[in-house]
Length: 385
Image (cartoon, rainbow, N blue to C red; front, side, top):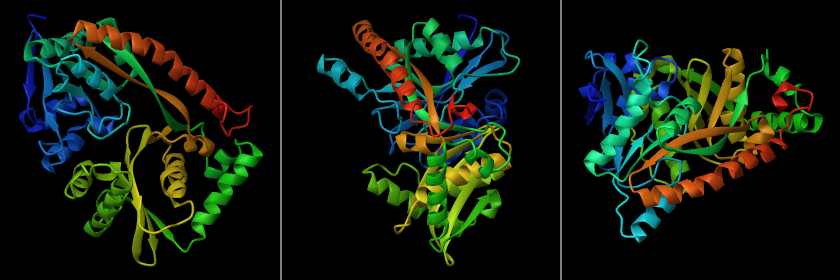
């Protein structure tokens, strides 16, 4: 790759929106300049949170921009949702230094999507050159490792062909099989499961709450102020870290416009809960949620059922409701494999992790298959597959 040029940048503004989005495209909101720059400009990605931007640009031999990828220098493994702390402990216990590492990811966001962002007219070998360039960055800068997380399956396959170690995970996604309404979706469920969902929706909607779905500039500063309170409540309850600042959410709304979808529950005039979603070309992505008070089935209503309603109404193919949560299966969200790929500079650590992943992969596949048996769909329905 001697004729190719690789550069690292400590912020998106050094690259520019036109250049970045020419590679990122418009399908996935999380890799857009709007989303990633909102993280930076709001102070959510910075020294304080331990995510230091080191975005990668790759120029082809003719000097044109061929690819970019969102990359961060990290001194910890928090906010990633693909857990490698065990690898770090093992390496450091043997006298190595695992951190800092290079993380190719969308911070705090376990949403699958493209990570090796190639320009539409880039040479066909661009992604392969970028895969090797990321390895080269580790070797030349003394980093222990590089991690491309929640990438597309074809990206994981390509990286594995270049010596990276592929890893699987499981999430739960809802798929739209051409439904015309929520009742149409309900009709595909087994009778007992259908009754449970109807009861949960009935109880959530009988609690004296009103519901709104707001998009873009329909979301007021007061709505975002309330939402940040809900976000902090969720973080505090889970003993997590509030990476996202109050400035992030309104900045996101300003830059992504109608692709920001906020579902709000109010008691009288007072907001008591909200769920933040982002809309891609064919997918609704659930991101953050929170509430005050104790409302029956409100989490399911705001985060799962209203997301399905929205996806059906807007002709979206899928709802991805975030990481974890086997309880989603009973609500129509089926197990789906996620992908990541890992490069470890130290050959002994790479060999040990490779052996671990060789055992983990079939276990993850078996888990996804076993969880599929709990699907609520009728066995003769395509949603059951």
